Amino acid sequence: QKEVEQNSGPLSVPEGAIASLNCTYSDRGSQSFFWYRQYSGKSPELIMSIYSNGDKEDGRFTAQLNKASQYVSLLIRDSQPSDSATYLCAVRNQGGKLIFGQGTELSVKP
Amino acid sequence: DVKVTQSSRYLVKRTGEKVFLECVQDMDHENMFWYRQDPGLGLRLIYFSYDVKMKEKGDIPEGYSVSREKKERFSLILESASTNQTSMYLCASSFDRGIKNIQYFGAGTRLSVL
Image (cartoon, rainbow over all chains, first blue to last red; front, side):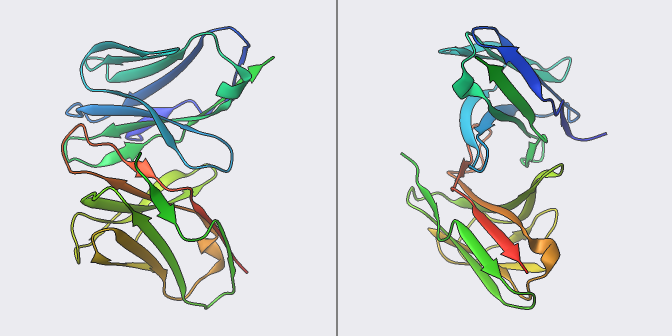
């Protein structure tokens, strides 16, 4: 079992829809969780961080964390073509190491 | 704004050459990291450093070494480049080792070894 798992996609949504990206992790002692966006050929850029159970909203982005289920998600409301990118989930495990998932490719169709 | 600068965006080298990839950060961060990113394999940690002159092996250190002589600079060295080291190399830095610390990435160096 991989330490951090994401569906590779591609996930395709129409413009204006909600995109839902999911991530599961194996280390129950993990304490911090991050979502990075990576455009093709570019480096990862942090868009959200979350540390406690529940929802955290920032503009059109909402991160959701459920530690009991070892699950973290990212919702993108009113998706735009400019949101088309690969989204990387990263989890800091109990040992302090940041583990990245392989990323989910999102395509927003006009 | 945090700035992590990698010296080259694209590099083409020949098999057997010694290759230096340079990374500089301007935010007085304690920690610096080198990753490589390959399709289907994601981001893999090569080496990291929590302090000047300190280095730790990551998940895939074979064929690489690093140098951190100054706090702001972390160099990745390919002692004898091979074709399987063709990849995107990403440098990152973070302030400390607290649970909320965030890694910031440089623009990346796409290395081709022929």
